[in-house]
Structure formats: structure tokens, C-alpha cells
Length: 302
Image (cartoon, rainbow, N blue to C red; front, side, top):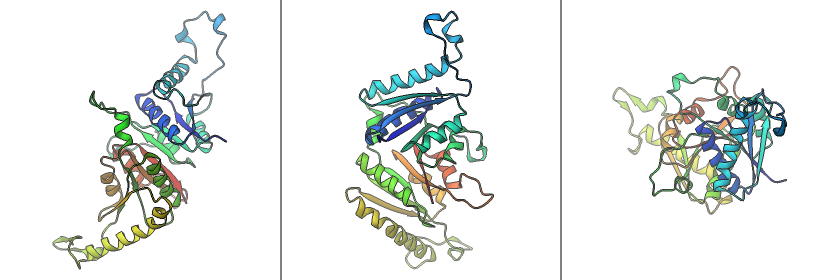
């Protein structure tokens, strides 16, 4: 069966940026691109020859226009890419979750977020990311670029960054990040953030992690050793991928956001099984979605 990359449409600038990103991802994966727009009020349109009312008054007009704009965006840059158009009379969250289960990757537009304190659960994209069983990518609207620069080429040459926790198995996350870097022919930067243990703090502040023999330096060295061990089998599996691993003695959320600077794609994980009463979106993922300056791939894993 031909693999599928699905992109959700809502007519926003972020949605069209997601379409462009998804089209390129479908090319990299030799996949079909599925354009999906879901709206509960979609209906079977009347016969065009029998239409008497203005086109804009048709109940499906805007849904069809969103689809047409997206298709035009794809064919302009990817004329040979196979495309499926899918207008669905269904709740958007339900439709996107179903589509995610049928796709290698689900791509959604992501609006620029306000500070973390204003995070709201009503956002469709975050609802989907928190529940999807396949990798989801959130793409913001593109910033303007200079006339002499093709932004697509520039982004594709940027590194893939992976935020990696070492508190449990996360093979699906690591494999997605390595595979993404391999497909793009770019460096993979593995980032790990580790809070210093209490003995590293004194009345004068935290130990210097770069000063040999300090508690902070030992903690950082332990983290670097664990990170290298976690990456070792994947370096062997993807020998052509250049890997740079970095440990920062700070929170994982801060490390991931810092590491995303200049990246073409940030890959973070979401555990399928979270403790009871805990939020479905953890603080690292939330920080990445709100503050990372690049597309964010969210990979569910055990």
C-alpha cells in the first residue's frame, strides 16, 4: 500500500504553510499527499447546471475554496505529487485522529502562541497532537524571506533537532528523528537537558558544570555518557547521519527550546501512557509547541 501523508486544512496562512511542508514530506517519503478538510455542516452540493443562487451562498463554498487553494499550492511546486482531496462532514478532531491512524505523518498548521501561561486546551491542533497515535507535525506560517533566497531550500538544509529524555524507552522518537535527518541529508542534533541535583547548589549558587570535580560536572558527565549510550545503536543503524549530541544542565523544556534555534525541524516525544490526572501534553512538549521557531514533530511512544 502506498504510504500517505495527511495535512489538515482550515484556510488559514498556517494551514497553507502546513500544506507546503506536507507536500515536501510526502516527496521525501515517496508518499501520496492527502488534503483533508473536515466540517460538520458539509452537505452534498447541488448540480452546478441547476444552480441559481450566488456561488458564495452555497453551504460548501468555503470548504471547496479551501481545498482548491491548497491543491493549487501543491501543484505549483510539486506537479507530479499524487494528491487525494478529502472533504469530510465530521467533527475536525475526530476526522484528524482517524486520518492520523491511516497516515505515516499528520501535518497541521499551528498559530503563533502567546506565553505559556495562556495555553488553552480548545486548540484543535493541540487536541489532536495529544491523542494521535502517529507522528504529528505542527507548522507555523512562514516568515518573509529575502528575494534572493528560496525559503524551502534554506529550511531543508537546516539540522533536525531531537529533544531526548533518558527516563525510559523512546525508540519510536529516536527512529523518527534519525529517519528525518537521513531523508534530508542533514545533521541530527540530539539535545538533553538535566536538572542539577541538590548537592550542586550552595549559598553561592550552582556549581560550575565545566569545572572538573564539581557535583555539576559529574552530573553533566553522567548525562553525556547516558546520552551517548542511548544513541549508539542508532548511529550504527544510520551510519550516514552525522550526529551531534549536547547536554545542558537545565530543565528539559529550556534545553529543547534552546536547541531548536536555527533548526529545520524539532522532534519531541509524547508518552502514550501518562500518570493519572496528569495533563495529556507535558511541559516539554508544551514549551516546544509554544516557543520553537521551526516545525515541531510530536512522536507518540511507549
